[in-house]
Image (cartoon, rainbow, N blue to C red; front, side, top):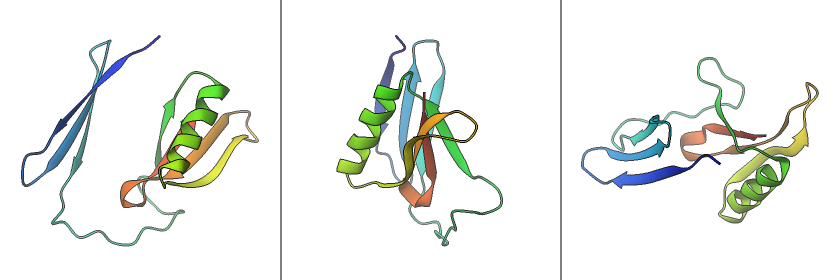
Length: 102
């Protein structure tokens, strides 16, 4: 089973969070509060979404339920897509879409 650690750094002017994975990979999530946040349409050019594989349908269901309970908008799923993927998709911070898949 893959494990990760979560580190939060609250240094001004940015707010940064890191996910560190056991294989050495790290994911940095940064927020710059003073930058303008323009409206974003779900169907738009450029960055569309990011997807995370959680390993099983049960975990997709569980994480989707947790995020819904925490107030995130679920915009699709959990479901099996036309191309055979089991997934759900939420709208997260700054209207970014996050896909949760097996």
